[in-house]
Amino acid sequence: MNSPIWKVASIVSVALALGVAGGYWLARPRLNEAPEVAVGQEASAEPKALYWYDPMYPQQKFDKPGKSPYMDMPLTPRYADGQGAQGDGAAVRIDPSLTQNFGLRLATVTRGVFASSVDAVGVLAFNEREVAVIQPRTAGFVERVYARAPGDLLKANAALADILVPEWAAAQEEFLALKASGDAGLLAAARQRLRLSGMPAALIAQVERSGKVQPDLTLSSPIGGVLQELNVRQGMTVAAGETLARVNGLNSVWLAVAVPESQAGSLVTGQVAEASLPAFPGEVFAGRVDAILPDANADSRTLRVRVELANPQGRLRPGMSARVSLKRSTQQPLLWVPSEAVIRTGRRALVMLAEEGGHYRPVEVQPGPDNAGQTAIFNGLEEGQQVVASGQFLLDSEASLKGIVAASLQAPAVALHEAQGQILAIDSQNVTLAHGPFKTLGMPAMTMTFPLANPGLTQGLKVGDKVRVALSQSDNGLRVERLEKAGSQP
Picture 1 (spheres, rainbow, N blue to C red):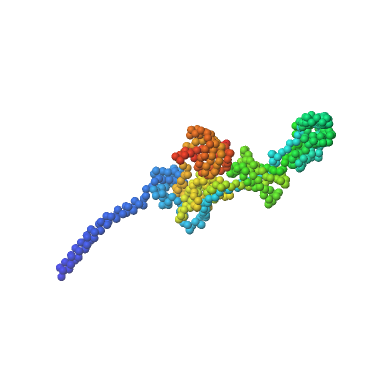
Picture 2: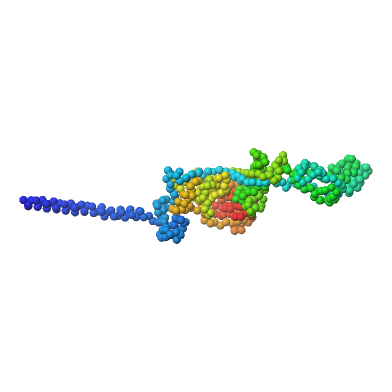
């Protein structure tokens, strides 16, 4: 009974052993492959690091891991695929659905003409070109002084004083005697002597017409305006050429404007100015910039700009204050972004450029002048791109922590060749100069047209300005890299 059972058990045991052995033999190649796959996966999980950096000083790179020399913390690797330790790319990414939560606001880079408006305050003053100085051309005695006083408003030809000139009496009697003789030649000579003695032509004509001696001279104001000085009194003796009165005209007035030196670079002579005075609310007085004076106020850091305003009705009085808007518009198109979008580090300017998929990266830009909350961009952006106008400092901090550094706009240093010259013609692309010799180029003085490196070099310059120019030389020829008024600081 036991023999058959034992035989069956033996057969089953052998079959099981053969099955286990065969299964192990079949599975052995697959088990051998598994470690290779695991090793490959582990290798892909450890990409090669290009360098290590401290997130607080991402511009400093290290060749091997370790502790930061600046902060007591381990260095962070930067990998060959541009990713940091957290696997982020060379841009900060924020889920688009969370953009509003972070207070991010975007603005589009636009292109438009440069239209500047500088607002400042000023004070009206006399036009010093409209001045009359009253002097006698001969000595005499003051017989009468008219009721005038400094500060009076005079009309043209208003009498100021009567002066007795004894020398004229004898000369006029001689003239009348020669007139009676009928000798035309002698009469002409006598008339010329009267004129050379300082007698006005109108008084000579009156003597000749009336036949009576007229030894009195009435001094009058040749123009209408404000009597500034009156140095004559009844009974005094006056000498030839002595200043007896001074009158300032009021047909036009000067508006002395104090402009901050940071905004003075956009001003040019002849640009439009609009003045509003508290004395005449709602009225705007138009004028033009007459001169940009060469000196600055060291205390207030302002430049003095002189605006000339027409004053046909005489309502504008020196001493009045005014708010002034100095406007300037050119046909030169520039790129513009909101001024708040520009991050100024002290050494360069950055903006956070918005890209698809919620990615943001820092971009270095070359900013130009500011105007009405907008900043011109000479280099670094293109029209239609979007930049972060609010919340950019948060993104910039995050980019710094991840070691994302904006590429520099600065090109490799090139040799510059400098000289001085005068602008004969200028536009947004070229400038024609009558220049002195470029000694480092071996170029003699001549007149020549050069291309400009960028349109912003023309700001504040006009035909006739004396300038310092710096040229670069390449396979494409000479190009103006720097152009500024002679005497200004580089």
